[in-house]
Length: 108
Image (tube, rainbow, N blue to C red; front, side, top):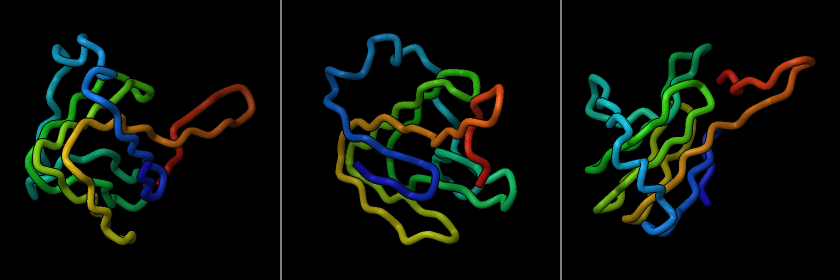
């Protein structure tokens, strides 16, 4: 497993990726050509992947996200050390927090 700030990246076997993921929208790259895993609402900084691949994400703040890196890649952020990822499939999980009466995504 890999963690950068409030983002957890878990390697998974291709067989563990649900067939429905093939029909999920491919997330576009940002202006710098990165796949943005999470955007900091407070700072504007991004946890993003550099390298060839695709990010498939269910809609909604708690939707599942799947990352496919056929050649590996790097996770970058303006305030964290980069993380080198091997090739393969990954499940991307955003950290959540409980506040009385609700569960929400952690604001970075």
